[in-house]
Length: 134
Image (cartoon, rainbow, N blue to C red):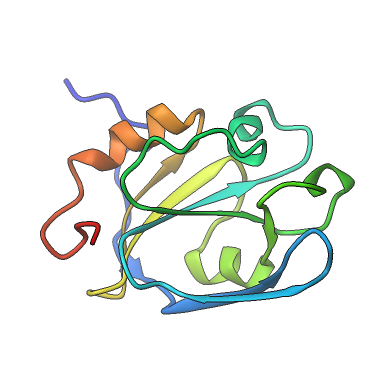
């Protein structure tokens, strides 16, 4: 039996990119060009800590760490404030992740994010030829 953080992932449209702000308030924009995991984080979240701290990402895909609102705990981190990205990916709470396949323009997998190793393990079998890292 395969363990996973959601019962049935919902494949659905994904945005081609996003706009947001970094912790200093500088605008950030990005287009998704290869498989990307978006991890939604919130303040005071144990499951989010590893992603917010900038510890090494173990996946072989791009990583975006996004918050829905500003918080002092995002200072000196790679977190982007991108509430519209949460909305576009239909993320309702954190910690949560969504795997984007930009070639198809869809979210191909999703679930609760407890650690980088767990997320990387869950998405490993979902990466197909169109999601393969370049």
